[in-house]
Length: 458
Image 1 (spheres, rainbow, N blue to C red):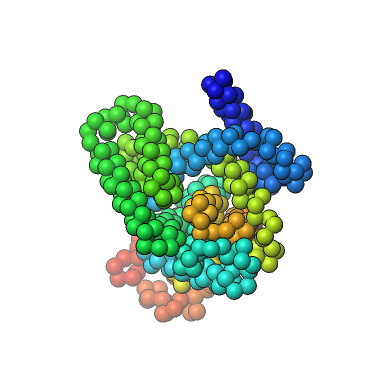
Image 2 (cartoon, helix red, strand yellow):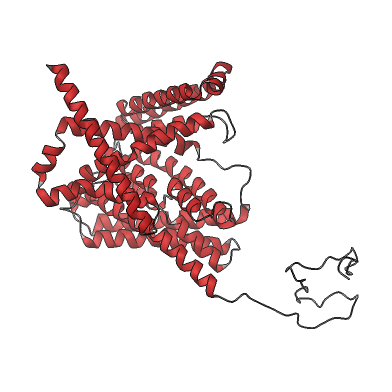
C-alpha cells in the first residue's frame, strides 16, 4: 500500500512537472511574439502560475492541485534542476584570452558594480527606516545590507548571453565587453553572497558552522578538480561523454545536498563544483558540463513555479507599491546609469555606452537564484523578495526595448562627416588636427615611411 501511494504521488508530481513545462513553452512563445527574450516569458509565467490559481480559485484549489507531498517532490525537481544548471553557469564565470580592452572593461565593471552596491545600501536604509517590520525581517543588519547589495548588483549572464545571440551581438565590441564584465561582476557577487550567508548566522556558533560548511565545500571542490584531471576521468569524458555527464551531475547533487545538510545553501555547493571543473570551452569536460547544464535548464521552469508559490503568495499581503517602485528605481539607477557612466569613462561613444548600460541592467534567472539563497538562509523576508523579483523582471524586460530604441536612433542619425581644415600641397604632411583624406572604401590612404602617398595610392 505504501509503495502504491508513493507511486501515485510520484506520478502526480511528474504530471505537474509536465504541466509546468507546457506553461513554460507558452511563456516562451508569448515572449517571442512580444519581441522579448524567451526567458522573460518563461520566468513570468512560472512565477505567476501559483498566485493566479490562488487569486482565481482560492488557496484550497492550489492545495488540491498540488498537495503538500506532491509539492515537495516538485520542489525536489526544481532544486535538482537549479543545482545542475548552476554547474554550467559557475563554469562560465571566467574570462577567456579574447578579452576586451582592460581599461574599458575595468571602467564598465566599476560603473556597473560600485553604484549598484551603493543603491543596495540606500534600499537597505529605506527598508530599515521606512518599510514595515514584515519587510525588514529579523536578519542581522550587515547580512541584510550585503544581501540586498548583491541582489541589486547581479547581471544575469545566461539571459545576457541569450539576448546577445538573438540580436547578433555576440561578436560585437559592446556585446563582448558587456558579457566579460557581467562574468566578472557575477563572480564577485557569488563571493559576496557567501559572506552574506555567513553573516546571516548571527552568532559565533552559526559562523563556525558556516565556516565548516565552506571548508567542506572547498575540499569537495578541490577533490573534484584534481579527480577530473586524472587520466581515467579524461578517458571517460572522451569515450563516454554522457556517462561522464551523469557522473558529474551526481557529484554536484551530492555536494549540494551535503552543503545544505551542514547549514549552507545548496546553491553554493553547486557553484563550487562548477568552478572546480577544469578547462575551457575546448577542454574535454566542456561537453559533459554543457549536458549537465542543459538538463538543469530543462527543469528550471519548476524552480520558477515553486518560487512563485512559496514567495509571491506569501509576499503579496505585506508588500506595498512604494516598496516595489523604490526597488525598481534603485535597481535601474545602479546598473543602467552606472553601466553607462562606466562605459563613457572607459572611452566608449554615447551610443555604445547606452547599449552597455542596457545590457548590464539585465537580470533574470541568476537574480532569482540569489534571491532564493537569501530566502532559504532567512536573510530576505518574502515581501522584500517579491519587490526584488518584480525588479528583476522589469529590468530584464527593459533590455530589448532599450536596445531597439538605440538602434532606431542610430539608423536615423546621419553619419558624421568632417572635412580637413585646410588642404595641403602634394607631398606635404597634413595640418595638425586635420583628418586624413579617405579613399572610396572609407580607408585612409597608404603612405610610405616619409608620409608620402605610395604608388598604389597615386
